[in-house]
Image (cartoon, rainbow over all chains, first blue to last red):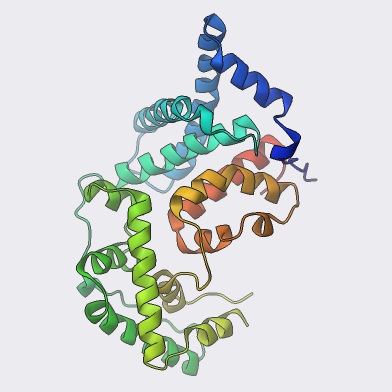
Length: 221
Length: 80
């Protein structure tokens, strides 16, 4: 039986628990230190659980590695939270708001550790062999026609940066925060480039008279 | 339910969602509210337009969404 999580509408103001967290964290005395310690414990539990779950996919990670990543993620999340306390708008519980920082850091740190020392595949020549017997033949032919057109448009319709980002993230499945770290930029900036590249590809396909929406609608039906 | 082929998954990654979508920054800002609304059974997509599109287009943000949702469900004693 699912116990619903009641949202905390901003119009209703902060819930009592969230208000208490903010009061204690804004305190000048020992209460603040105690609250920071409790918050770090919460973040560490969330980060440890997340790291453990994600590391199951990476057998190269040992228990000690996982503890290091969880600790680092909780530390990073705590710093981020303390720097953004004024941004908390009370539209969710304070703990929900705080957890997302720990999970974000844990996921990003696991992905970065998993790709540490690996060369990033940025080359469109690494076009994967996607042949499989799943779809009906006519649909498979349509999909392959679209993919062939996209492969050409990647070369002719995108800027060098857009091409590099699209190929790495969408074609070669390099995690976006791994690529951001290597290119010394942010996840948001890379996603903007990816978004712009996708828009350009969609426009180019439409110019060729290829209907993407209809194709994807058929997929759902 | 239709099993997506490898080609269709690749097509989805290359072309992304068709509709409007939030940025990664806005997605992170709204993620806690979105997940609480979802778990409360409210219409989270109507409350935060563009969120679903972004989660469809950004695998990293989609993973963050799944993780926060799973954590809150675990804490409330729900099964995923």
